[in-house]
Figure (tube, rainbow, N blue to C red):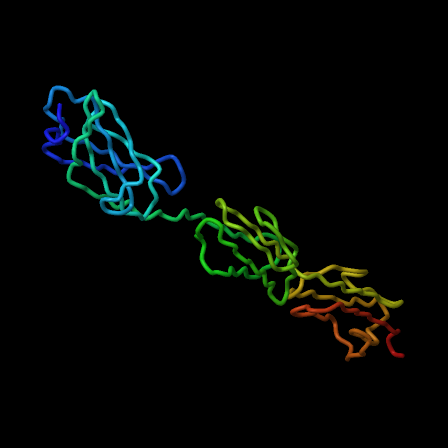
Length: 258
Protein backbone atom coordinates (compact mmCIF):
# COMPACT_ATOMS: atom_id res chain seq x y z
CA UNK A 1 0.00 0.00 0.00
CA UNK A 2 1.36 3.43 -0.83
CA UNK A 3 1.12 6.15 1.78
CA UNK A 4 -0.42 8.76 -0.53
CA UNK A 5 -3.35 6.42 -1.27
CA UNK A 6 -3.96 5.63 2.37
CA UNK A 7 -6.36 8.12 3.88
CA UNK A 8 -9.16 8.03 6.43
CA UNK A 9 -12.62 8.53 5.01
CA UNK A 10 -15.75 9.68 6.82
CA UNK A 11 -13.76 11.50 9.50
CA UNK A 12 -16.48 11.76 12.10
CA UNK A 13 -15.17 11.54 15.65
CA UNK A 14 -17.74 11.31 18.41
CA UNK A 15 -16.65 12.59 21.81
CA UNK A 16 -18.39 11.62 25.04
CA UNK A 17 -17.13 13.19 28.27
CA UNK A 18 -16.69 10.96 31.30
CA UNK A 19 -15.14 11.44 34.72
CA UNK A 20 -11.70 9.99 35.28
CA UNK A 21 -10.56 8.67 38.64
CA UNK A 22 -7.98 11.38 39.27
CA UNK A 23 -9.19 14.44 41.14
CA UNK A 24 -10.31 17.22 38.76
CA UNK A 25 -9.40 15.08 35.72
CA UNK A 26 -11.69 13.92 32.93
CA UNK A 27 -11.65 11.68 29.93
CA UNK A 28 -13.21 11.45 26.48
CA UNK A 29 -14.43 8.52 24.44
CA UNK A 30 -13.87 8.89 20.71
CA UNK A 31 -14.77 6.75 17.70
CA UNK A 32 -14.35 7.02 13.93
CA UNK A 33 -15.27 5.26 10.72
CA UNK A 34 -13.20 2.28 9.65
CA UNK A 35 -10.73 2.77 6.79
CA UNK A 36 -11.91 0.53 3.87
CA UNK A 37 -8.48 -0.47 2.59
CA UNK A 38 -7.66 -4.13 3.10
CA UNK A 39 -4.16 -3.77 4.53
CA UNK A 40 -5.04 -1.45 7.43
CA UNK A 41 -3.20 -2.67 10.54
CA UNK A 42 -4.34 -0.07 13.05
CA UNK A 43 -5.03 3.50 14.01
CA UNK A 44 -3.34 6.25 16.01
CA UNK A 45 -5.06 9.03 17.89
CA UNK A 46 -3.23 12.35 18.17
CA UNK A 47 -4.32 14.97 20.68
CA UNK A 48 -3.18 18.09 22.51
CA UNK A 49 -4.30 21.47 23.78
CA UNK A 50 -3.27 23.43 20.66
CA UNK A 51 -4.89 23.08 17.24
CA UNK A 52 -2.85 20.85 14.89
CA UNK A 53 -0.11 20.63 17.50
CA UNK A 54 -0.45 17.24 19.13
CA UNK A 55 1.82 16.40 22.02
CA UNK A 56 0.24 13.04 22.72
CA UNK A 57 -0.20 9.89 20.62
CA UNK A 58 -2.22 6.80 21.37
CA UNK A 59 -1.86 3.65 19.23
CA UNK A 60 -5.16 1.78 19.52
CA UNK A 61 -4.35 -1.06 17.09
CA UNK A 62 -7.21 -2.24 14.85
CA UNK A 63 -9.96 -0.69 16.99
CA UNK A 64 -12.00 2.30 15.82
CA UNK A 65 -12.66 3.74 19.27
CA UNK A 66 -10.58 4.88 22.21
CA UNK A 67 -10.99 6.23 25.72
CA UNK A 68 -8.51 8.90 26.77
CA UNK A 69 -8.23 9.79 30.45
CA UNK A 70 -6.24 12.26 32.49
CA UNK A 71 -7.46 15.38 30.72
CA UNK A 72 -7.42 18.65 32.66
CA UNK A 73 -10.68 20.22 33.73
CA UNK A 74 -11.47 23.47 31.92
CA UNK A 75 -9.07 22.83 29.01
CA UNK A 76 -9.88 22.47 25.31
CA UNK A 77 -8.36 19.46 23.52
CA UNK A 78 -7.93 18.80 19.80
CA UNK A 79 -8.04 15.32 18.25
CA UNK A 80 -7.14 13.71 14.92
CA UNK A 81 -6.80 10.09 13.72
CA UNK A 82 -4.48 8.36 11.25
CA UNK A 83 -4.41 4.80 9.88
CA UNK A 84 -1.30 2.71 9.30
CA UNK A 85 -0.58 -0.48 7.36
CA UNK A 86 1.43 -3.56 8.24
CA UNK A 87 4.64 -1.87 7.04
CA UNK A 88 4.06 1.10 9.30
CA UNK A 89 3.07 3.46 6.53
CA UNK A 90 0.76 6.11 7.99
CA UNK A 91 -2.06 7.98 6.35
CA UNK A 92 -2.74 11.67 6.43
CA UNK A 93 -4.60 12.84 9.52
CA UNK A 94 -8.35 13.03 9.67
CA UNK A 95 -10.07 16.34 10.07
CA UNK A 96 -9.56 17.77 13.53
CA UNK A 97 -12.26 17.79 16.17
CA UNK A 98 -12.18 19.45 19.56
CA UNK A 99 -13.74 19.08 22.98
CA UNK A 100 -13.74 21.40 25.97
CA UNK A 101 -13.52 19.60 29.28
CA UNK A 102 -15.94 21.00 31.89
CA UNK A 103 -14.43 23.17 34.60
CA UNK A 104 -13.96 21.31 37.87
CA UNK A 105 -16.86 21.64 40.28
CA UNK A 106 -15.52 22.65 43.69
CA UNK A 107 -16.17 20.24 46.52
CA UNK A 108 -18.45 21.76 49.16
CA UNK A 109 -18.59 20.69 52.78
CA UNK A 110 -21.18 21.55 55.42
CA UNK A 111 -20.37 23.15 58.77
CA UNK A 112 -22.98 22.44 61.45
CA UNK A 113 -22.84 24.57 64.59
CA UNK A 114 -24.90 23.73 67.68
CA UNK A 115 -25.13 25.13 71.22
CA UNK A 116 -25.32 23.23 74.51
CA UNK A 117 -25.44 24.05 78.20
CA UNK A 118 -27.76 25.90 80.55
CA UNK A 119 -26.85 29.33 79.21
CA UNK A 120 -27.20 31.10 75.91
CA UNK A 121 -25.12 33.01 73.41
CA UNK A 122 -24.32 33.37 69.72
CA UNK A 123 -21.78 31.77 67.38
CA UNK A 124 -20.64 33.63 64.26
CA UNK A 125 -18.50 32.34 61.39
CA UNK A 126 -15.97 34.14 59.22
CA UNK A 127 -16.46 33.78 56.32
CA UNK A 128 -20.19 33.58 56.90
CA UNK A 129 -22.30 30.65 55.72
CA UNK A 130 -22.67 26.95 56.37
CA UNK A 131 -21.23 25.42 53.16
CA UNK A 132 -17.61 25.99 52.21
CA UNK A 133 -15.22 24.84 49.50
CA UNK A 134 -12.65 22.22 50.42
CA UNK A 135 -9.70 23.64 52.34
CA UNK A 136 -11.48 26.79 53.54
CA UNK A 137 -10.38 27.96 56.99
CA UNK A 138 -13.41 29.10 59.00
CA UNK A 139 -13.13 31.09 62.23
CA UNK A 140 -15.93 30.60 64.76
CA UNK A 141 -16.47 33.14 67.53
CA UNK A 142 -18.65 32.42 70.56
CA UNK A 143 -20.27 35.34 72.39
CA UNK A 144 -22.14 34.55 75.63
CA UNK A 145 -25.05 36.75 76.65
CA UNK A 146 -24.94 38.90 79.79
CA UNK A 147 -26.09 36.11 82.11
CA UNK A 148 -23.92 33.33 80.65
CA UNK A 149 -20.33 32.25 80.34
CA UNK A 150 -18.69 30.38 77.48
CA UNK A 151 -17.69 26.88 78.64
CA UNK A 152 -15.76 25.58 75.62
CA UNK A 153 -15.87 23.88 72.22
CA UNK A 154 -16.47 20.26 71.30
CA UNK A 155 -16.62 18.40 67.99
CA UNK A 156 -14.49 18.65 64.87
CA UNK A 157 -12.65 21.92 65.40
CA UNK A 158 -8.98 22.17 64.45
CA UNK A 159 -7.87 24.54 67.19
CA UNK A 160 -9.27 27.01 69.69
CA UNK A 161 -8.22 29.95 71.81
CA UNK A 162 -10.91 30.86 74.31
CA UNK A 163 -14.04 31.95 72.52
CA UNK A 164 -12.46 31.50 69.06
CA UNK A 165 -12.20 28.22 67.16
CA UNK A 166 -10.70 27.54 63.72
CA UNK A 167 -12.07 24.81 61.46
CA UNK A 168 -10.46 23.67 58.19
CA UNK A 169 -13.17 22.35 55.90
CA UNK A 170 -11.75 19.14 54.48
CA UNK A 171 -14.93 17.22 55.32
CA UNK A 172 -18.36 17.83 56.79
CA UNK A 173 -17.78 19.18 60.31
CA UNK A 174 -20.00 19.49 63.39
CA UNK A 175 -18.93 21.85 66.17
CA UNK A 176 -20.70 22.56 69.45
CA UNK A 177 -20.33 25.64 71.67
CA UNK A 178 -21.27 25.29 75.35
CA UNK A 179 -22.77 28.20 77.26
CA UNK A 180 -23.54 28.00 80.98
CA UNK A 181 -25.58 30.36 83.11
CA UNK A 182 -23.60 32.41 85.60
CA UNK A 183 -24.36 31.49 89.22
CA UNK A 184 -24.30 33.55 92.38
CA UNK A 185 -24.53 32.85 96.10
CA UNK A 186 -27.00 34.33 98.58
CA UNK A 187 -26.23 33.89 102.28
CA UNK A 188 -29.21 34.21 104.61
CA UNK A 189 -29.18 34.38 108.42
CA UNK A 190 -31.57 35.22 111.25
CA UNK A 191 -31.00 36.39 114.82
CA UNK A 192 -32.57 35.08 118.02
CA UNK A 193 -36.34 35.35 118.17
CA UNK A 194 -37.30 34.14 114.72
CA UNK A 195 -36.26 32.53 111.48
CA UNK A 196 -35.58 33.24 107.80
CA UNK A 197 -36.67 30.89 105.02
CA UNK A 198 -34.74 29.62 103.23
CA UNK A 199 -31.71 29.92 105.47
CA UNK A 200 -28.03 29.34 104.88
CA UNK A 201 -26.28 29.59 101.49
CA UNK A 202 -28.15 29.21 98.23
CA UNK A 203 -26.78 29.08 94.68
CA UNK A 204 -28.95 30.88 92.13
CA UNK A 205 -28.75 31.38 88.37
CA UNK A 206 -28.03 34.78 86.89
CA UNK A 207 -31.16 36.68 85.96
CA UNK A 208 -33.37 34.67 88.32
CA UNK A 209 -35.16 35.79 91.48
CA UNK A 210 -35.34 34.45 95.03
CA UNK A 211 -37.71 35.34 97.85
CA UNK A 212 -36.96 35.19 101.58
CA UNK A 213 -39.64 35.20 104.31
CA UNK A 214 -39.13 36.24 107.95
CA UNK A 215 -41.08 34.60 110.79
CA UNK A 216 -40.79 35.89 114.36
CA UNK A 217 -41.50 33.61 117.32
CA UNK A 218 -44.43 34.20 119.61
CA UNK A 219 -43.81 37.34 121.59
CA UNK A 220 -41.25 38.65 119.09
CA UNK A 221 -41.41 40.98 116.09
CA UNK A 222 -39.05 41.90 113.29
CA UNK A 223 -36.55 44.49 114.41
CA UNK A 224 -34.49 45.07 111.25
CA UNK A 225 -33.61 43.61 107.86
CA UNK A 226 -30.21 44.10 106.27
CA UNK A 227 -29.58 43.55 102.56
CA UNK A 228 -25.90 43.39 101.63
CA UNK A 229 -25.14 45.09 104.92
CA UNK A 230 -27.58 47.95 104.38
CA UNK A 231 -30.51 48.24 106.80
CA UNK A 232 -34.00 48.57 105.36
CA UNK A 233 -37.39 49.05 107.02
CA UNK A 234 -38.80 45.96 108.75
CA UNK A 235 -40.78 43.88 106.24
CA UNK A 236 -42.26 40.38 106.18
CA UNK A 237 -40.33 39.19 103.12
CA UNK A 238 -37.78 40.30 100.55
CA UNK A 239 -37.22 39.27 96.89
CA UNK A 240 -33.95 39.55 94.98
CA UNK A 241 -34.88 40.18 91.32
CA UNK A 242 -32.75 39.74 88.19
CA UNK A 243 -29.82 38.52 90.25
CA UNK A 244 -26.45 39.60 88.89
CA UNK A 245 -24.22 39.47 91.99
CA UNK A 246 -23.63 37.69 95.27
CA UNK A 247 -25.84 38.88 98.12
CA UNK A 248 -26.36 38.64 101.87
CA UNK A 249 -29.60 38.99 103.77
CA UNK A 250 -30.10 38.99 107.53
CA UNK A 251 -32.98 39.64 109.85
CA UNK A 252 -33.05 40.43 113.58
CA UNK A 253 -35.91 40.24 116.02
CA UNK A 254 -36.92 41.90 119.30
CA UNK A 255 -39.48 41.24 121.96
CA UNK A 256 -42.74 43.00 121.45
CA UNK A 257 -43.18 46.16 123.45
CA UNK A 258 -39.48 46.88 123.57
